[in-house]
Length: 132
Image: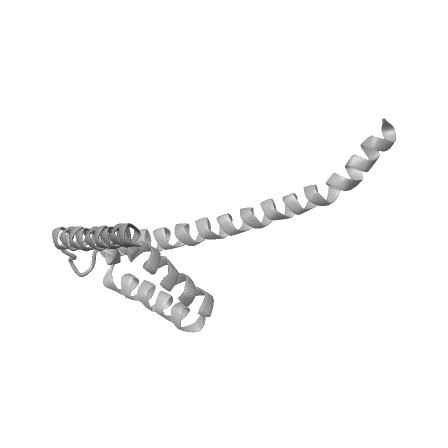
């Protein structure tokens, strides 16, 4: 029994190590995403509070700091673009004001034409079977 347990341990160790690596990478990716979201939410709150309660110079300084960070760091630029694309994706899905009724009417018309074509093809095949 001891040899069998040793063999099982030897075979399962690489799988456990790979699973641990997958969990570690997943943890790091999720943590980075959460930190990114928290950083942008914090920045938005700081900017809002700055607009509401602090002098205009402080708000201008905050804008200048972020603008210089955006200009200097490719990572920050990519993170900013990604964040705002993901933030605006639900809005962009409906932009520019699609007419849902016209879309459903168009889909129904396309389905009706498709059904008519299928029925015509089936009729033609049935007639060919009767002749042939």
